[in-house]
Length: 202
Ligand code: SAM
Image (cartoon, rainbow, N blue to C red; front, side, top):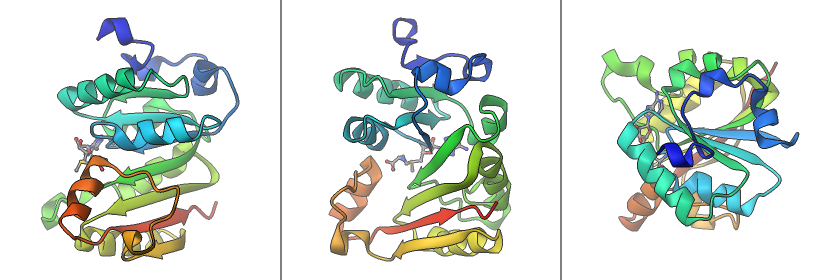
């Protein structure tokens, strides 16, 4: 892993020069929290060279699988990965450093006692708001209707604007949609994919 430390960053909380310094440009930075094996973030990095992407995943074995895919994809220069819990975002990024957060097929945590672990819980929205630019965006896809309904309520109760809400993304598949691993799996079973875009009002 150490030999690929240019892609998989070992100590993301020690970015002294900031993230734009790391990428060596002022392009927008988009992060995916819970990137899994990386198919989405790699596809996005290859499709959009003028945007910088960071995939964040909290399991070691999963981030290593993502690293292998990034290597296979030729290590796009606008893509980095690191292992962290999304709870630690404010220790890793400065205020206003990030332009967009992607959440894809986030774990639903269906039990009420686990509600704070949902990545669209108010606790996480506060963290995203802290690291995003004013008016920063969250784009969210899921197969889980209950999580989607919960997220619509959580996001609108937070005072964010909702936009492009879809209850069946693949019915009119946007040309620029990059499928995640989970999206391929669930849509192959005929399940609808829910999607929303939201924007902070700050
Ligand atoms: N986004 C991928 C996709 O759509 O194929 C993976 C979806 S998978 C269901 C959810 C991923 O989010 C898992 O790999 C899990 O380890 C990661 N995850 C869940 N909670 C997280 C958190 N708080 N911080 C970082 N990663 C998290």
